[in-house]
Length: 290
Image 1: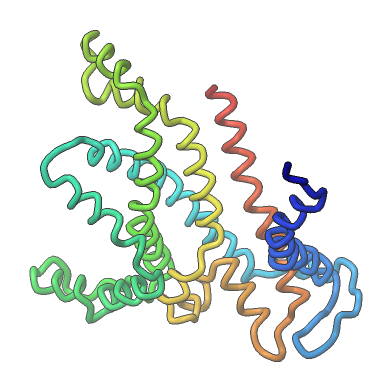
Image 2: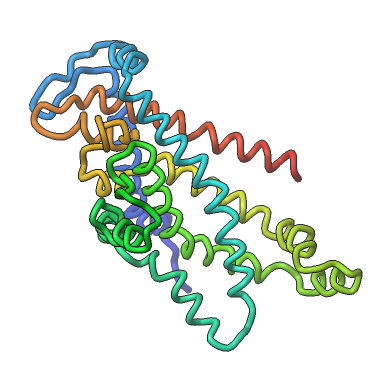
């Protein structure tokens, strides 16, 4: 008869618990503590009360960064919630050669975000492929400032994010579509419902919980955008630094020997609060729809 020792489950859980505490819980607690100090990489750490949060309220650069992050989320949210679903519905069908299209849509997901952003930067600069081709066709007389105009740079980064995220969320929707009963589609078709009506009346209700999950993931990712804007703007944050995201601002204040870790930690808490807002709103909307 096998004797089961009482500490065996704790031994199995211990590595994951240590990992969780060291890399998740402790950094979070430390960030909250640092937010109330004037800590720097090489010293400081004196308690300053709410001084960092008072500075947050008067930071014009943070206002721009928050606006950029919110615009990024508002545009990405509907696009990355609906487009992958439509693509998943199309590639779900068992047709000859359909695997090619599934692979083509998923390929950008496995590519490095930095490499993809560099390629997009090469395509969109004043002498890039897009401007060169448009000028060759005679559509434009002068290059379009995709990377030197504040809003065009932001929407270029949004386009890159949407293009790269389509395949990832398509896979999530494909697994969800497998749980939508085919009999419901057949019954709707017998009643005279066309493809569009079946999509809204059968498919969308069947994957509503997955749509909520995708919406939350997209919202959190969009508010934490960094690589796309950083690479497309060569780390400058665009013209006048007005295309920085909140994460880029945190990185700017925390880097180097003279970094302001206390203020960067306060910005991290602000970003956390801003991120929780859309999640609660989406959960509330989902409960109402249910």
